[in-house]
Image (cartoon, rainbow, N blue to C red; front, top):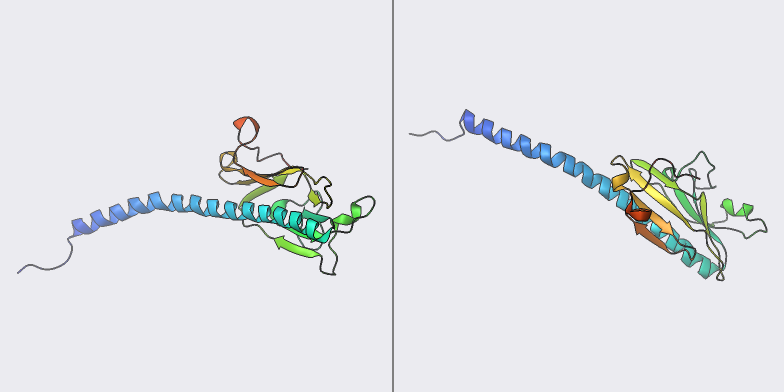
Length: 182
């Protein structure tokens, strides 16, 4: 009578195949997680820009998108966009300096804390959207993770305030992840 079960050789072959498949799948899963995080953060920034554009038209007041850590005031040069950003309605003063602080009266429209494992750099410290056909702040914000410049994405904001996502820089070159902060 024959016994049911696996031989030692069958068990070792099965474990070897499972190990090889795991070594192939685990790095691919890591890349997928990085892609998902970057896509979520890029989409959140595009959403922030679109929200700012629509709110400035609706409220007839300037709306600011800026980097922040505390979700109450815009950050300075020591802060980067990977610390977070916020969208708020500003007061339109003569010199524009008073635009950079949200007040406690509820002018904060949106805030976001990115999940990217890397850097988010911009050539602008903040983006201001103004009503009545006045020019908005244009600029580029580059999202880089540990995969480097080849996997970087950028949101390019035009003078009209329209955002677009790019996967390559000017001349079909990769974005520079190291030196891109103002």
